[in-house]
Image (cartoon, rainbow, N blue to C red):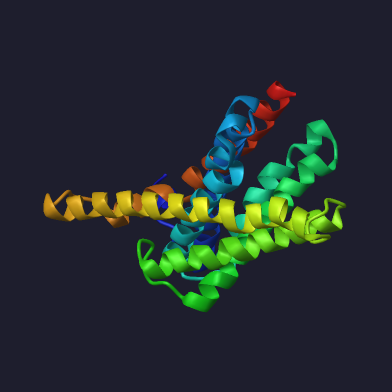
Length: 237
């Protein structure tokens, strides 16, 4: 059993790190993502929209994955894992657009983040450069999102009125709210980190890395994410 917590091969380390964060992302998409699409949250508009709430979480997870592994490709792999977890619904609900497009968007989010990190190369998760990275990634992702919507038949760029009502709404208003949430949550996390330094809270980083990024934990997280995704989606159908 001890060997499960002491992965030494660098490729296996990368795989289990990516599997862990991809599983966490998939689980949050299945739980919080499902809640955000419920009708009673519609009255909150963009302040409780999937885009504004889920994107900061996804970008933080991708940032943590990159900090842990230091390979850009790991971000893309993480998105693929989260996307596959989302795509698992086709087993029970069939291959339709409402099932496979969310998985596609997850992969696009990861590619946007990978490109943004390649440009800025942030060294810390909680820093102005990291917020800039998220801004570049989210703007790139939303622009691609709007292009896909236009390609699918939803008018976005056809005239000024539709651009203001849909294009500017996503690209500027929802994007600004998302960045505001990112900055606020980052500020809270930074405050907690500073308190841990002031009060000398003990945190054995190496021990927790062994506990989280190993075959047993990473596989369990992925399995739970798959099961939760399928069960919740089937229940709300």
